[in-house]
Image (cartoon, rainbow, N blue to C red):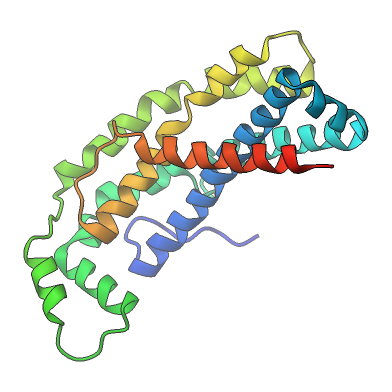
Length: 231
Protein backbone atom coordinates (compact mmCIF):
# COMPACT_ATOMS: atom_id res chain seq x y z
CA UNK A 1 0.00 0.00 0.00
CA UNK A 2 1.36 3.40 -0.97
CA UNK A 3 2.21 5.62 1.99
CA UNK A 4 0.81 9.18 1.96
CA UNK A 5 3.18 12.00 1.08
CA UNK A 6 4.49 13.75 4.19
CA UNK A 7 2.83 17.09 4.85
CA UNK A 8 5.55 18.32 7.22
CA UNK A 9 7.10 20.46 4.49
CA UNK A 10 5.09 19.83 1.31
CA UNK A 11 5.80 21.24 -2.09
CA UNK A 12 3.18 23.32 -3.86
CA UNK A 13 1.99 20.35 -5.90
CA UNK A 14 1.97 17.96 -2.92
CA UNK A 15 -0.08 20.32 -0.78
CA UNK A 16 -2.76 20.99 -3.39
CA UNK A 17 -2.91 17.31 -4.35
CA UNK A 18 -3.77 16.41 -0.75
CA UNK A 19 -6.15 19.35 -0.59
CA UNK A 20 -8.03 17.97 -3.61
CA UNK A 21 -8.24 14.51 -2.01
CA UNK A 22 -9.71 15.96 1.19
CA UNK A 23 -12.08 18.19 -0.76
CA UNK A 24 -13.28 15.12 -2.65
CA UNK A 25 -14.14 13.35 0.61
CA UNK A 26 -15.92 16.43 1.99
CA UNK A 27 -17.99 16.78 -1.18
CA UNK A 28 -18.80 13.06 -1.21
CA UNK A 29 -19.99 13.21 2.40
CA UNK A 30 -22.15 16.29 1.85
CA UNK A 31 -23.58 15.15 -1.49
CA UNK A 32 -24.52 11.69 -0.24
CA UNK A 33 -26.11 13.19 2.87
CA UNK A 34 -28.12 15.88 1.12
CA UNK A 35 -29.29 13.72 -1.80
CA UNK A 36 -30.46 11.06 0.67
CA UNK A 37 -32.55 13.52 2.64
CA UNK A 38 -33.84 15.40 -0.40
CA UNK A 39 -35.21 12.19 -1.91
CA UNK A 40 -36.56 11.04 1.45
CA UNK A 41 -38.34 14.33 2.09
CA UNK A 42 -39.86 14.39 -1.39
CA UNK A 43 -41.25 10.89 -0.90
CA UNK A 44 -42.79 11.88 2.42
CA UNK A 45 -44.27 15.13 1.12
CA UNK A 46 -45.50 14.16 -2.36
CA UNK A 47 -47.73 11.15 -3.03
CA UNK A 48 -46.97 11.23 -6.77
CA UNK A 49 -43.24 10.88 -6.08
CA UNK A 50 -43.96 8.15 -3.55
CA UNK A 51 -45.80 6.24 -6.28
CA UNK A 52 -42.81 6.64 -8.62
CA UNK A 53 -40.43 5.26 -6.01
CA UNK A 54 -42.74 2.34 -5.24
CA UNK A 55 -42.50 1.15 -8.84
CA UNK A 56 -38.96 -0.04 -8.11
CA UNK A 57 -38.67 -0.22 -4.31
CA UNK A 58 -35.65 -2.53 -4.28
CA UNK A 59 -33.66 -0.09 -6.42
CA UNK A 60 -34.46 2.88 -4.19
CA UNK A 61 -33.73 0.91 -1.03
CA UNK A 62 -30.33 0.02 -2.46
CA UNK A 63 -29.81 3.64 -3.53
CA UNK A 64 -30.53 4.86 0.01
CA UNK A 65 -28.14 2.31 1.50
CA UNK A 66 -25.44 3.28 -1.01
CA UNK A 67 -25.78 6.95 -0.10
CA UNK A 68 -25.59 6.19 3.62
CA UNK A 69 -22.54 3.97 3.12
CA UNK A 70 -20.79 6.58 0.97
CA UNK A 71 -21.29 9.16 3.69
CA UNK A 72 -19.82 6.99 6.43
CA UNK A 73 -16.81 6.00 4.33
CA UNK A 74 -16.02 9.57 3.25
CA UNK A 75 -16.75 11.17 6.61
CA UNK A 76 -14.73 8.53 8.44
CA UNK A 77 -11.71 9.12 6.20
CA UNK A 78 -11.75 12.84 6.99
CA UNK A 79 -10.99 12.17 10.66
CA UNK A 80 -8.79 9.12 10.22
CA UNK A 81 -5.84 9.61 12.61
CA UNK A 82 -3.75 6.66 11.41
CA UNK A 83 -0.24 7.64 10.39
CA UNK A 84 -0.64 6.30 6.84
CA UNK A 85 -3.93 8.07 6.13
CA UNK A 86 -4.74 11.50 4.75
CA UNK A 87 -7.16 13.53 6.82
CA UNK A 88 -8.51 17.04 7.22
CA UNK A 89 -6.56 17.18 10.51
CA UNK A 90 -3.25 16.70 8.70
CA UNK A 91 -4.22 19.19 6.02
CA UNK A 92 -4.96 21.85 8.63
CA UNK A 93 -1.67 21.14 10.43
CA UNK A 94 0.20 21.48 7.14
CA UNK A 95 -1.61 24.73 6.33
CA UNK A 96 -0.63 26.29 9.66
CA UNK A 97 2.97 25.03 9.50
CA UNK A 98 3.58 26.31 5.97
CA UNK A 99 2.47 29.94 5.60
CA UNK A 100 4.97 30.30 2.76
CA UNK A 101 2.49 28.41 0.57
CA UNK A 102 0.23 31.46 0.85
CA UNK A 103 2.87 34.16 0.39
CA UNK A 104 2.80 36.72 -2.40
CA UNK A 105 5.60 34.90 -4.19
CA UNK A 106 3.66 31.62 -4.06
CA UNK A 107 0.51 33.39 -5.26
CA UNK A 108 2.46 35.00 -8.10
CA UNK A 109 3.82 31.62 -9.25
CA UNK A 110 0.36 30.08 -8.98
CA UNK A 111 -1.29 32.81 -11.04
CA UNK A 112 1.46 32.76 -13.66
CA UNK A 113 1.13 29.01 -14.08
CA UNK A 114 -2.65 29.10 -14.21
CA UNK A 115 -2.61 31.90 -16.80
CA UNK A 116 0.27 30.38 -18.78
CA UNK A 117 2.34 33.55 -18.45
CA UNK A 118 5.86 33.67 -19.84
CA UNK A 119 8.25 36.58 -19.47
CA UNK A 120 7.47 39.69 -17.42
CA UNK A 121 4.41 39.90 -15.20
CA UNK A 122 1.46 41.58 -16.94
CA UNK A 123 0.18 44.81 -15.44
CA UNK A 124 -2.93 43.18 -13.95
CA UNK A 125 -0.78 40.74 -11.99
CA UNK A 126 1.55 43.45 -10.70
CA UNK A 127 -1.44 45.45 -9.43
CA UNK A 128 -3.08 42.35 -8.00
CA UNK A 129 0.02 41.33 -6.05
CA UNK A 130 0.65 44.83 -4.73
CA UNK A 131 -2.59 44.68 -2.72
CA UNK A 132 -2.55 40.96 -1.98
CA UNK A 133 -2.78 39.82 1.64
CA UNK A 134 -0.38 37.18 2.89
CA UNK A 135 -0.76 35.37 6.22
CA UNK A 136 1.60 34.84 9.10
CA UNK A 137 1.45 31.64 11.15
CA UNK A 138 -0.74 33.39 13.73
CA UNK A 139 -3.29 34.18 11.02
CA UNK A 140 -3.63 30.48 10.25
CA UNK A 141 -4.07 29.25 13.82
CA UNK A 142 -7.88 29.74 13.73
CA UNK A 143 -8.13 26.85 11.27
CA UNK A 144 -7.12 24.46 14.05
CA UNK A 145 -9.23 26.07 16.74
CA UNK A 146 -12.24 25.95 14.41
CA UNK A 147 -11.70 22.27 13.65
CA UNK A 148 -10.87 21.00 17.16
CA UNK A 149 -14.38 21.14 18.66
CA UNK A 150 -15.76 19.32 15.62
CA UNK A 151 -13.13 16.63 15.98
CA UNK A 152 -14.05 16.23 19.65
CA UNK A 153 -17.68 15.88 18.61
CA UNK A 154 -16.76 13.42 15.88
CA UNK A 155 -17.42 10.37 18.03
CA UNK A 156 -20.65 11.88 19.33
CA UNK A 157 -21.90 12.56 15.79
CA UNK A 158 -20.38 9.80 13.68
CA UNK A 159 -20.45 6.75 15.92
CA UNK A 160 -24.08 6.94 17.10
CA UNK A 161 -25.33 7.30 13.53
CA UNK A 162 -23.08 4.49 12.34
CA UNK A 163 -24.38 2.34 15.18
CA UNK A 164 -27.96 3.19 14.23
CA UNK A 165 -27.64 2.46 10.50
CA UNK A 166 -25.13 -0.38 10.38
CA UNK A 167 -25.43 -2.23 13.69
CA UNK A 168 -28.94 -1.98 15.10
CA UNK A 169 -31.65 -0.41 12.96
CA UNK A 170 -33.43 1.76 15.50
CA UNK A 171 -36.44 4.03 15.38
CA UNK A 172 -34.67 7.38 15.76
CA UNK A 173 -36.34 10.13 13.75
CA UNK A 174 -34.74 11.19 10.47
CA UNK A 175 -34.99 14.83 11.53
CA UNK A 176 -32.79 14.14 14.57
CA UNK A 177 -30.23 12.36 12.42
CA UNK A 178 -30.35 15.21 9.90
CA UNK A 179 -29.44 17.72 12.62
CA UNK A 180 -26.32 15.73 13.37
CA UNK A 181 -25.28 15.70 9.71
CA UNK A 182 -25.74 19.47 9.53
CA UNK A 183 -22.75 19.96 11.81
CA UNK A 184 -20.37 18.97 9.02
CA UNK A 185 -20.80 22.28 7.15
CA UNK A 186 -17.67 23.67 8.82
CA UNK A 187 -15.53 21.27 6.75
CA UNK A 188 -16.76 22.71 3.47
CA UNK A 189 -16.28 26.25 4.78
CA UNK A 190 -12.78 25.49 6.04
CA UNK A 191 -11.68 24.13 2.65
CA UNK A 192 -13.34 27.03 0.85
CA UNK A 193 -11.42 29.47 3.06
CA UNK A 194 -8.11 27.72 2.28
CA UNK A 195 -8.82 27.87 -1.46
CA UNK A 196 -9.78 31.55 -1.29
CA UNK A 197 -6.63 32.29 0.70
CA UNK A 198 -4.41 30.37 -1.71
CA UNK A 199 -5.89 31.62 -4.97
CA UNK A 200 -7.40 35.01 -4.15
CA UNK A 201 -5.33 36.17 -1.14
CA UNK A 202 -8.47 36.54 0.98
CA UNK A 203 -8.40 36.51 4.76
CA UNK A 204 -10.17 33.37 6.01
CA UNK A 205 -13.62 33.80 7.53
CA UNK A 206 -14.68 30.53 9.11
CA UNK A 207 -18.04 31.95 10.18
CA UNK A 208 -19.20 32.62 6.63
CA UNK A 209 -21.24 29.62 5.45
CA UNK A 210 -22.69 31.38 2.40
CA UNK A 211 -20.74 29.28 -0.12
CA UNK A 212 -21.83 26.09 1.61
CA UNK A 213 -25.45 27.24 1.75
CA UNK A 214 -25.48 28.20 -1.94
CA UNK A 215 -23.77 25.00 -3.03
CA UNK A 216 -26.16 22.80 -1.04
CA UNK A 217 -29.20 24.75 -2.24
CA UNK A 218 -28.15 24.11 -5.85
CA UNK A 219 -27.53 20.42 -5.16
CA UNK A 220 -30.94 20.02 -3.55
CA UNK A 221 -32.63 21.78 -6.47
CA UNK A 222 -30.92 19.57 -9.06
CA UNK A 223 -31.84 16.43 -7.13
CA UNK A 224 -35.46 17.48 -6.79
CA UNK A 225 -35.68 18.37 -10.49
CA UNK A 226 -34.31 14.96 -11.45
CA UNK A 227 -36.75 13.11 -9.19
CA UNK A 228 -39.76 15.09 -10.38
CA UNK A 229 -38.86 14.44 -14.03
CA UNK A 230 -38.88 10.67 -13.59
CA UNK A 231 -41.70 9.05 -15.59
